[in-house]
Image (cartoon, rainbow, N blue to C red; front, top):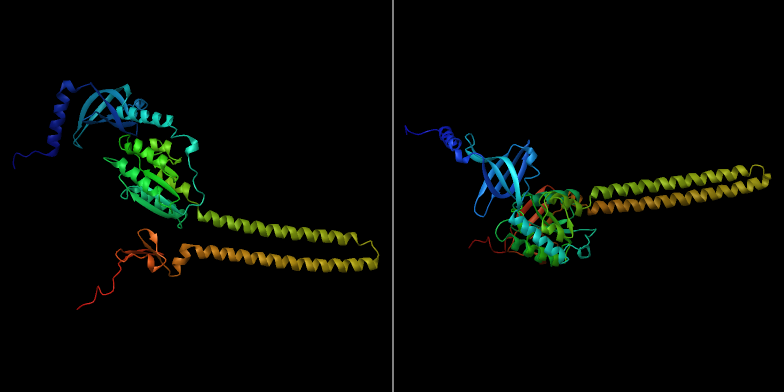
Length: 397
Protein backbone atom coordinates (compact mmCIF):
# COMPACT_ATOMS: atom_id res chain seq x y z
CA UNK A 1 0.00 0.00 0.00
CA UNK A 2 1.30 3.44 -0.94
CA UNK A 3 0.11 5.09 2.29
CA UNK A 4 1.83 2.63 4.65
CA UNK A 5 4.27 4.12 7.17
CA UNK A 6 7.32 2.52 8.75
CA UNK A 7 7.56 1.28 12.34
CA UNK A 8 10.02 4.07 13.10
CA UNK A 9 7.64 6.71 11.77
CA UNK A 10 4.78 5.38 13.91
CA UNK A 11 6.90 5.11 17.08
CA UNK A 12 8.31 8.59 16.53
CA UNK A 13 4.78 9.99 16.12
CA UNK A 14 3.65 8.31 19.39
CA UNK A 15 6.68 9.69 21.24
CA UNK A 16 5.91 13.22 20.01
CA UNK A 17 2.38 12.90 21.37
CA UNK A 18 3.69 12.00 24.83
CA UNK A 19 6.37 14.71 24.75
CA UNK A 20 3.89 17.38 23.67
CA UNK A 21 1.33 16.63 26.39
CA UNK A 22 2.15 19.01 29.27
CA UNK A 23 -0.20 17.20 31.64
CA UNK A 24 2.11 14.17 31.56
CA UNK A 25 5.24 16.08 32.60
CA UNK A 26 6.44 15.69 36.23
CA UNK A 27 3.24 14.09 37.51
CA UNK A 28 2.93 12.20 40.84
CA UNK A 29 1.84 8.53 40.69
CA UNK A 30 1.05 6.39 43.74
CA UNK A 31 1.43 2.60 43.81
CA UNK A 32 3.11 -0.45 45.35
CA UNK A 33 6.66 -1.40 44.28
CA UNK A 34 7.46 -4.83 42.85
CA UNK A 35 10.05 -6.46 40.58
CA UNK A 36 13.04 -4.32 41.66
CA UNK A 37 16.37 -4.78 39.84
CA UNK A 38 19.55 -2.69 39.65
CA UNK A 39 22.05 -2.58 36.79
CA UNK A 40 24.76 -0.06 35.87
CA UNK A 41 23.46 2.60 38.27
CA UNK A 42 19.94 2.32 36.82
CA UNK A 43 17.00 1.11 38.96
CA UNK A 44 14.25 -0.84 37.23
CA UNK A 45 10.95 -1.58 38.97
CA UNK A 46 7.18 -1.49 38.51
CA UNK A 47 4.28 0.12 40.35
CA UNK A 48 0.93 -1.58 40.76
CA UNK A 49 -2.50 -1.05 42.23
CA UNK A 50 -5.54 -3.34 42.31
CA UNK A 51 -6.01 -3.31 38.53
CA UNK A 52 -2.87 -2.15 36.67
CA UNK A 53 0.91 -2.06 36.57
CA UNK A 54 3.33 0.62 35.36
CA UNK A 55 6.97 -0.11 34.34
CA UNK A 56 9.37 2.45 35.82
CA UNK A 57 13.02 3.37 35.42
CA UNK A 58 15.10 5.62 37.68
CA UNK A 59 18.52 6.98 36.70
CA UNK A 60 19.26 8.24 40.24
CA UNK A 61 20.94 5.37 42.20
CA UNK A 62 20.66 7.34 45.47
CA UNK A 63 16.94 6.37 45.54
CA UNK A 64 17.78 2.65 45.73
CA UNK A 65 17.29 2.56 49.51
CA UNK A 66 13.77 3.95 49.12
CA UNK A 67 12.72 1.68 46.26
CA UNK A 68 11.98 -1.45 48.31
CA UNK A 69 9.88 -4.43 47.27
CA UNK A 70 6.36 -4.15 48.72
CA UNK A 71 6.58 -0.49 49.76
CA UNK A 72 3.87 1.96 48.82
CA UNK A 73 5.34 5.14 47.29
CA UNK A 74 4.57 8.29 45.36
CA UNK A 75 6.92 8.74 42.42
CA UNK A 76 7.28 11.91 40.40
CA UNK A 77 8.25 11.73 36.75
CA UNK A 78 7.10 11.58 33.15
CA UNK A 79 6.16 8.80 30.74
CA UNK A 80 8.75 8.25 28.04
CA UNK A 81 8.09 6.27 24.88
CA UNK A 82 11.27 4.62 23.50
CA UNK A 83 10.95 4.67 19.72
CA UNK A 84 13.61 2.01 19.07
CA UNK A 85 11.99 -0.63 21.31
CA UNK A 86 8.40 0.61 21.03
CA UNK A 87 8.11 0.51 24.80
CA UNK A 88 6.70 2.89 27.39
CA UNK A 89 8.52 3.54 30.69
CA UNK A 90 7.82 6.02 33.44
CA UNK A 91 11.03 7.97 34.11
CA UNK A 92 11.22 8.64 37.86
CA UNK A 93 13.01 11.72 39.22
CA UNK A 94 11.80 11.57 42.83
CA UNK A 95 10.49 8.95 45.29
CA UNK A 96 8.45 9.50 48.48
CA UNK A 97 7.55 6.62 50.78
CA UNK A 98 3.89 6.39 51.78
CA UNK A 99 4.09 3.16 53.73
CA UNK A 100 4.14 -0.57 53.24
CA UNK A 101 2.06 -2.17 50.50
CA UNK A 102 -0.93 -4.34 51.26
CA UNK A 103 0.87 -7.55 50.30
CA UNK A 104 3.82 -6.79 52.56
CA UNK A 105 1.48 -5.85 55.40
CA UNK A 106 -0.22 -9.25 55.01
CA UNK A 107 3.22 -10.89 55.14
CA UNK A 108 4.13 -9.10 58.38
CA UNK A 109 0.73 -9.87 59.93
CA UNK A 110 0.99 -13.61 59.24
CA UNK A 111 4.61 -13.68 60.35
CA UNK A 112 3.71 -12.14 63.71
CA UNK A 113 0.70 -14.46 64.08
CA UNK A 114 2.74 -17.62 63.49
CA UNK A 115 5.58 -16.37 65.67
CA UNK A 116 3.19 -15.85 68.59
CA UNK A 117 1.75 -19.34 67.97
CA UNK A 118 5.25 -20.84 68.39
CA UNK A 119 5.73 -21.94 64.78
CA UNK A 120 9.26 -20.50 64.67
CA UNK A 121 10.46 -21.89 68.04
CA UNK A 122 13.69 -23.91 67.96
CA UNK A 123 12.18 -26.79 69.98
CA UNK A 124 9.91 -27.56 67.01
CA UNK A 125 12.83 -27.82 64.58
CA UNK A 126 13.69 -31.37 63.48
CA UNK A 127 17.32 -32.46 63.06
CA UNK A 128 18.61 -33.05 59.54
CA UNK A 129 19.78 -36.70 59.16
CA UNK A 130 23.53 -37.26 58.77
CA UNK A 131 23.26 -40.13 56.30
CA UNK A 132 20.77 -39.28 53.55
CA UNK A 133 19.82 -41.83 50.87
CA UNK A 134 16.68 -40.29 49.37
CA UNK A 135 15.64 -36.62 49.03
CA UNK A 136 12.12 -35.44 48.24
CA UNK A 137 11.97 -32.24 46.16
CA UNK A 138 8.84 -30.10 45.81
CA UNK A 139 9.11 -27.75 42.84
CA UNK A 140 8.17 -27.42 39.17
CA UNK A 141 9.49 -30.09 36.82
CA UNK A 142 9.84 -27.43 34.11
CA UNK A 143 12.16 -25.00 35.90
CA UNK A 144 15.94 -24.92 36.26
CA UNK A 145 15.68 -25.53 40.02
CA UNK A 146 15.24 -29.31 39.83
CA UNK A 147 18.11 -29.59 37.33
CA UNK A 148 20.39 -27.56 39.64
CA UNK A 149 19.53 -29.84 42.56
CA UNK A 150 20.12 -33.01 40.51
CA UNK A 151 23.46 -31.73 39.21
CA UNK A 152 24.77 -30.87 42.67
CA UNK A 153 23.50 -34.02 44.42
CA UNK A 154 24.66 -36.53 41.80
CA UNK A 155 28.00 -34.79 41.28
CA UNK A 156 28.75 -35.11 44.98
CA UNK A 157 27.12 -38.49 45.63
CA UNK A 158 25.50 -40.49 42.78
CA UNK A 159 24.14 -43.02 45.32
CA UNK A 160 21.50 -40.56 46.59
CA UNK A 161 17.99 -40.88 45.08
CA UNK A 162 15.79 -37.86 44.27
CA UNK A 163 11.98 -37.99 44.30
CA UNK A 164 10.35 -35.03 42.51
CA UNK A 165 6.81 -33.91 43.39
CA UNK A 166 5.81 -31.56 40.55
CA UNK A 167 3.82 -28.49 41.68
CA UNK A 168 3.11 -24.93 40.63
CA UNK A 169 5.56 -22.47 42.16
CA UNK A 170 3.37 -19.38 41.74
CA UNK A 171 -0.08 -18.34 40.60
CA UNK A 172 -3.59 -19.49 41.36
CA UNK A 173 -3.86 -22.45 43.79
CA UNK A 174 -0.06 -22.90 43.92
CA UNK A 175 -0.15 -22.89 47.73
CA UNK A 176 -2.66 -25.77 47.74
CA UNK A 177 -0.46 -27.89 45.50
CA UNK A 178 2.62 -27.17 47.61
CA UNK A 179 0.82 -27.96 50.90
CA UNK A 180 -0.58 -31.19 49.41
CA UNK A 181 2.90 -32.23 48.21
CA UNK A 182 4.35 -31.67 51.69
CA UNK A 183 1.61 -33.81 53.25
CA UNK A 184 2.16 -36.67 50.75
CA UNK A 185 5.98 -36.74 50.94
CA UNK A 186 5.79 -36.40 54.73
CA UNK A 187 4.16 -39.86 54.83
CA UNK A 188 6.67 -41.42 52.37
CA UNK A 189 8.69 -43.84 54.54
CA UNK A 190 11.81 -44.00 52.36
CA UNK A 191 12.34 -40.23 52.13
CA UNK A 192 14.88 -38.86 54.62
CA UNK A 193 14.41 -35.12 54.05
CA UNK A 194 12.31 -32.74 51.90
CA UNK A 195 13.46 -29.67 49.94
CA UNK A 196 10.80 -27.07 49.05
CA UNK A 197 12.39 -24.98 46.31
CA UNK A 198 11.91 -22.38 43.58
CA UNK A 199 13.94 -19.58 41.99
CA UNK A 200 13.86 -15.93 42.92
CA UNK A 201 11.14 -13.42 42.17
CA UNK A 202 9.08 -10.54 43.49
CA UNK A 203 7.02 -10.66 46.67
CA UNK A 204 4.00 -11.41 44.51
CA UNK A 205 5.80 -14.25 42.69
CA UNK A 206 6.80 -15.88 46.00
CA UNK A 207 3.40 -15.38 47.66
CA UNK A 208 2.42 -19.08 47.66
CA UNK A 209 5.22 -19.64 50.20
CA UNK A 210 3.86 -16.83 52.42
CA UNK A 211 0.49 -18.48 53.05
CA UNK A 212 -0.82 -20.00 56.26
CA UNK A 213 -1.80 -23.17 54.39
CA UNK A 214 1.81 -23.92 53.43
CA UNK A 215 3.07 -22.87 56.88
CA UNK A 216 0.70 -25.36 58.57
CA UNK A 217 1.79 -28.16 56.21
CA UNK A 218 5.47 -27.52 57.00
CA UNK A 219 4.85 -27.25 60.74
CA UNK A 220 2.90 -30.53 60.87
CA UNK A 221 5.18 -32.50 58.53
CA UNK A 222 6.90 -35.45 60.29
CA UNK A 223 9.90 -35.21 57.94
CA UNK A 224 12.58 -32.50 58.23
CA UNK A 225 12.09 -29.75 55.63
CA UNK A 226 14.65 -27.42 54.07
CA UNK A 227 13.34 -24.19 52.57
CA UNK A 228 15.21 -23.13 49.42
CA UNK A 229 12.87 -20.47 48.04
CA UNK A 230 14.18 -17.51 46.06
CA UNK A 231 17.59 -15.91 46.29
CA UNK A 232 19.69 -15.33 49.39
CA UNK A 233 18.06 -11.93 49.98
CA UNK A 234 14.49 -13.27 49.63
CA UNK A 235 12.67 -14.23 52.85
CA UNK A 236 9.32 -16.00 53.02
CA UNK A 237 7.15 -17.43 55.81
CA UNK A 238 8.27 -20.97 54.97
CA UNK A 239 11.87 -19.95 55.75
CA UNK A 240 10.94 -19.29 59.38
CA UNK A 241 8.73 -22.39 59.84
CA UNK A 242 11.03 -24.92 58.12
CA UNK A 243 13.71 -26.85 59.98
CA UNK A 244 16.51 -25.26 57.95
CA UNK A 245 16.77 -22.43 55.39
CA UNK A 246 19.17 -22.64 52.46
CA UNK A 247 20.05 -19.45 50.54
CA UNK A 248 19.50 -21.20 47.17
CA UNK A 249 18.25 -24.59 45.89
CA UNK A 250 21.82 -25.56 44.91
CA UNK A 251 23.03 -24.73 48.42
CA UNK A 252 20.29 -26.97 49.88
CA UNK A 253 21.47 -29.86 47.70
CA UNK A 254 25.05 -29.31 48.82
CA UNK A 255 24.07 -29.20 52.50
CA UNK A 256 22.37 -32.60 52.25
CA UNK A 257 25.06 -34.57 50.39
CA UNK A 258 28.50 -35.76 51.39
CA UNK A 259 31.19 -35.69 48.72
CA UNK A 260 32.41 -39.25 48.05
CA UNK A 261 35.82 -37.91 47.05
CA UNK A 262 36.21 -36.54 50.59
CA UNK A 263 35.51 -40.01 51.99
CA UNK A 264 38.10 -41.53 49.68
CA UNK A 265 40.70 -38.92 50.61
CA UNK A 266 40.02 -39.52 54.28
CA UNK A 267 40.53 -43.26 53.76
CA UNK A 268 43.94 -42.68 52.15
CA UNK A 269 44.85 -40.23 54.91
CA UNK A 270 44.07 -42.85 57.55
CA UNK A 271 46.15 -45.42 55.64
CA UNK A 272 49.10 -43.03 55.40
CA UNK A 273 48.95 -42.16 59.10
CA UNK A 274 48.72 -45.86 59.97
CA UNK A 275 51.87 -46.75 58.02
CA UNK A 276 53.67 -43.73 59.45
CA UNK A 277 52.76 -44.72 63.02
CA UNK A 278 53.95 -48.32 62.55
CA UNK A 279 57.20 -47.16 60.94
CA UNK A 280 57.90 -44.78 63.83
CA UNK A 281 57.05 -47.52 66.34
CA UNK A 282 59.49 -49.98 64.75
CA UNK A 283 62.21 -47.33 64.52
CA UNK A 284 61.76 -46.51 68.20
CA UNK A 285 62.04 -50.16 69.14
CA UNK A 286 65.21 -50.55 67.03
CA UNK A 287 66.64 -47.56 68.82
CA UNK A 288 65.78 -49.00 72.24
CA UNK A 289 67.34 -52.34 71.33
CA UNK A 290 70.53 -50.64 70.14
CA UNK A 291 70.67 -48.68 73.38
CA UNK A 292 70.33 -51.84 75.42
CA UNK A 293 73.07 -53.54 73.34
CA UNK A 294 75.37 -50.56 73.86
CA UNK A 295 74.88 -50.67 77.65
CA UNK A 296 75.92 -54.33 77.72
CA UNK A 297 79.36 -53.73 76.21
CA UNK A 298 81.10 -53.50 79.58
CA UNK A 299 79.45 -56.59 81.01
CA UNK A 300 81.19 -59.94 81.32
CA UNK A 301 81.88 -61.60 78.01
CA UNK A 302 79.74 -64.64 78.60
CA UNK A 303 76.93 -62.55 79.90
CA UNK A 304 77.29 -60.25 76.91
CA UNK A 305 77.13 -63.16 74.49
CA UNK A 306 74.16 -64.64 76.31
CA UNK A 307 72.29 -61.36 76.51
CA UNK A 308 73.18 -60.45 72.94
CA UNK A 309 71.86 -63.74 71.64
CA UNK A 310 68.76 -63.33 73.75
CA UNK A 311 68.20 -59.84 72.40
CA UNK A 312 68.80 -60.92 68.82
CA UNK A 313 66.25 -63.68 69.20
CA UNK A 314 63.77 -61.22 70.68
CA UNK A 315 64.58 -58.77 67.92
CA UNK A 316 63.97 -61.35 65.19
CA UNK A 317 60.81 -62.55 66.90
CA UNK A 318 59.56 -59.00 67.31
CA UNK A 319 60.33 -58.07 63.67
CA UNK A 320 58.58 -61.20 62.43
CA UNK A 321 55.52 -60.41 64.54
CA UNK A 322 55.50 -56.80 63.37
CA UNK A 323 55.83 -57.77 59.70
CA UNK A 324 53.05 -60.31 60.11
CA UNK A 325 50.83 -57.71 61.83
CA UNK A 326 51.60 -55.08 59.16
CA UNK A 327 50.87 -57.52 56.33
CA UNK A 328 47.57 -58.44 58.00
CA UNK A 329 46.57 -54.77 58.28
CA UNK A 330 47.52 -54.06 54.66
CA UNK A 331 45.42 -57.07 53.68
CA UNK A 332 42.48 -55.66 55.65
CA UNK A 333 42.98 -52.23 54.04
CA UNK A 334 42.98 -53.92 50.63
CA UNK A 335 39.68 -55.59 51.43
CA UNK A 336 38.19 -52.25 52.49
CA UNK A 337 39.38 -50.58 49.27
CA UNK A 338 37.97 -53.45 47.19
CA UNK A 339 34.64 -53.17 49.03
CA UNK A 340 34.49 -49.44 48.31
CA UNK A 341 35.10 -50.10 44.61
CA UNK A 342 32.40 -52.76 44.52
CA UNK A 343 29.75 -50.43 45.86
CA UNK A 344 30.80 -47.59 43.50
CA UNK A 345 27.91 -47.45 40.97
CA UNK A 346 30.23 -46.19 38.24
CA UNK A 347 32.48 -49.24 38.60
CA UNK A 348 29.45 -51.54 38.40
CA UNK A 349 28.04 -49.78 35.30
CA UNK A 350 31.49 -49.81 33.60
CA UNK A 351 31.46 -53.63 33.80
CA UNK A 352 28.37 -53.78 31.64
CA UNK A 353 25.76 -53.95 34.34
CA UNK A 354 22.76 -51.63 34.33
CA UNK A 355 20.33 -50.20 36.87
CA UNK A 356 16.63 -50.68 36.12
CA UNK A 357 14.00 -48.30 37.49
CA UNK A 358 10.24 -47.95 37.16
CA UNK A 359 8.43 -44.87 38.53
CA UNK A 360 11.79 -43.67 40.01
CA UNK A 361 12.07 -46.90 42.03
CA UNK A 362 14.87 -49.45 41.61
CA UNK A 363 13.74 -52.89 40.30
CA UNK A 364 15.58 -55.88 41.77
CA UNK A 365 13.09 -58.65 40.94
CA UNK A 366 10.54 -59.25 38.19
CA UNK A 367 7.87 -59.51 40.86
CA UNK A 368 8.05 -55.73 41.30
CA UNK A 369 7.63 -54.93 37.55
CA UNK A 370 4.39 -53.34 36.39
CA UNK A 371 4.06 -54.66 32.82
CA UNK A 372 1.80 -51.75 31.88
CA UNK A 373 4.58 -49.20 32.43
CA UNK A 374 7.92 -48.63 30.73
CA UNK A 375 11.25 -49.48 32.31
CA UNK A 376 14.17 -47.03 32.56
CA UNK A 377 17.52 -48.75 31.99
CA UNK A 378 20.46 -46.71 33.34
CA UNK A 379 23.81 -47.48 31.67
CA UNK A 380 27.19 -45.92 32.33
CA UNK A 381 26.70 -43.26 29.60
CA UNK A 382 22.97 -42.61 29.66
CA UNK A 383 19.43 -43.88 30.04
CA UNK A 384 17.18 -46.00 27.79
CA UNK A 385 13.41 -46.21 28.09
CA UNK A 386 12.19 -49.78 27.41
CA UNK A 387 8.64 -50.89 26.68
CA UNK A 388 7.52 -54.27 28.04
CA UNK A 389 5.91 -56.42 25.34
CA UNK A 390 3.47 -58.89 26.76
CA UNK A 391 3.51 -62.43 25.44
CA UNK A 392 1.37 -62.67 22.34
CA UNK A 393 1.23 -58.93 21.52
CA UNK A 394 3.40 -59.22 18.35
CA UNK A 395 2.00 -62.58 17.14
CA UNK A 396 0.31 -62.37 13.79
CA UNK A 397 -2.67 -64.52 12.99
